[in-house]
Length: 391
Image (cartoon, rainbow, N blue to C red; front, top):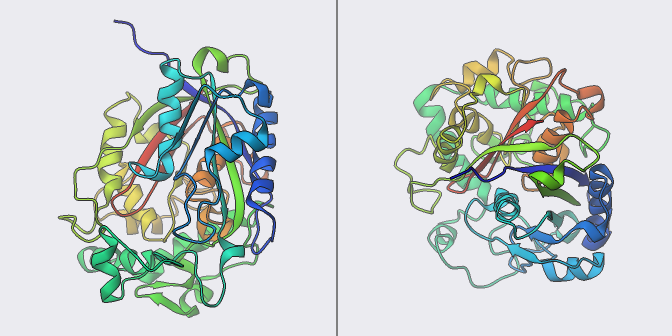
């Protein structure tokens, strides 16, 4: 039996993101889509598939205001295949299922999108990032956490950080190195929302959010959209830029679907997904040039580093302290500023940046000679990982 042809990423685009922009989500989405299509050398008529995460939802203001149907209508797309994936590997899911769709002939070019208006949707009495904001009913695993005051993912990530600190001697200064490095990258990215320099002193002096996580350990809610175009391998050859082959994907989960019931709270679903990724390729972590690692909270970065095998379990603090992930480091992480300084697009912005790096389009922050990149999305029990190679 011959192997299925690989899928490829052929275009990415991001809208002009910002805080409290007041722009409708659809305007952000259309801008991102047109930029992705231009980069790919495609038109709207070429798109025959569409996918998103998590689909249109009203359980948290501005978190997911657009569904596949209204985007199809607004962009005038005529699709043969569509998908909205609320569960599974979450943020990475639409890109993964789009790859499977083009590999099995369901579509030729799939437009995957993420659009948010979380910043504009917040008010003094309504926070878009709080579980169940604007809703009286909360179900599932959240129903066990919210009654004891664990309302936000910052609380749940704080548990993980506390346990990791206890087990391995990590300090707030180590997490500060993550935040400071990402701000340095953001200052080289004109699209990043945070441009002011950030020092370790600034980081340590900021107010506490959920110990040991402070203000600069948390990502930035924004308004904006990002689009990733996934194409069949043969169709990708006709696009404007060299295709970024999807070398491998991983989304395994071997723990309960909760934040607090994993047997080892110094690991996340990322560790299952990471092991799954490397089992599907002959490439190794040493072959990777640039990383996009989910940083909804700074503690996720060291855990993703370990999950993907860039250092051993418990070794991330030293790996970070050696300067590996910062500008000029061997394994630069979140070179666009990440979500801590670039703005929260729930992982799509991280993949957007990895793709720019592999195409050599990252400007002042370009990693010389980057040809292989890895992206890991998700925190807690949800995780998806993808390995890309410029062909």
